Image (cartoon, rainbow, N blue to C red; front, side, top):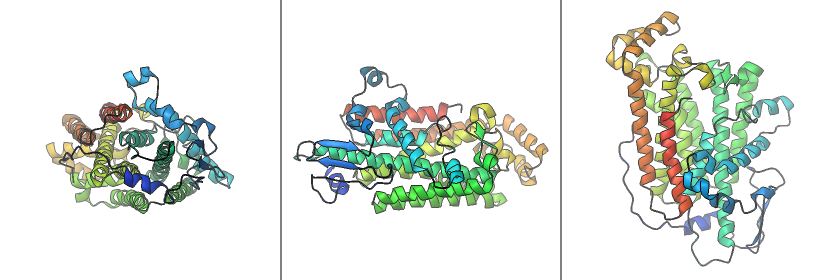
Length: 420
């Protein structure tokens, strides 16, 4: 069911106190050590008297929060590319992900790191959204606390939110590996799909391995609400894929069924991850729901445009075969809208799209209809709902917060205007 309205919540001060209490239960400013498996084994985080800090064996992370929030004036003024705002963090996340998927068995290691290698690690869209959301929901530390302690808490929070971004990317890549096996795909991200290169069995096991690593990292956060959210995401991925595989003729031609399946397969991951970012920051239920609605509607808009590009894009631009959905008998929004204009298209679909002649006939009907345009319009509606969620967040005068919120708004535009 479509999200119809976002209520504006009161513009009240953000309660940072619950966030403070949720980070370190011991509430003691002396030596701390993190066992978070989101970071390389044997590395640690320490705070000595709230001043001396080192980060999990990455010297470049010293004062990283300040590095992010004090970029050059040209970036602050232009802010043309949301990805550039978190580029340094994305690089560190990419390096950590490559370390996290190392396995003892060489073949499994090669398979697990296949889509994390430099050059084939994708657009990193989801980590970008989550890092921007983390800054957009920035919380001030209530006073008074020992000097330097607020910075240490903020750094620890950022590390936990980075962990959500890493977990999300691992779950996403695992779902791609499994999807490619189910779809018998031979390309992904412009190269041979893992199942095509290494076989179905190893591709499935690599996906399972990534999910297990994601689970270990998730458990390290020790936040039952966040664990429950992301466990539900994995359930949704399986449910969505099963809905696609087992749909009846009536269900395949239902827009409501299509949107529910799309939420499960695509939007659930980004929406619940955005909510997890808010929960880790100790935000209110209202703010957490706005973060969720942003991710949900952005994810739906993203998939709707993906479904359009499957008809209008080229294999080279998409990094995978065009017309792949309809050739696999998968009915998406453009065909569903075309079917409303030309009911006789339903008979063609029911006859089976494994017949190339029926595919050609379906494309002919699509070309005569407003199916592509209406799918784009629906994507725009969800992009606007995502933007409305950001506009409804409590006001914040911090320039870094405002800049990240503008970047999140920019992404809603980029999602619906992209060509690949």
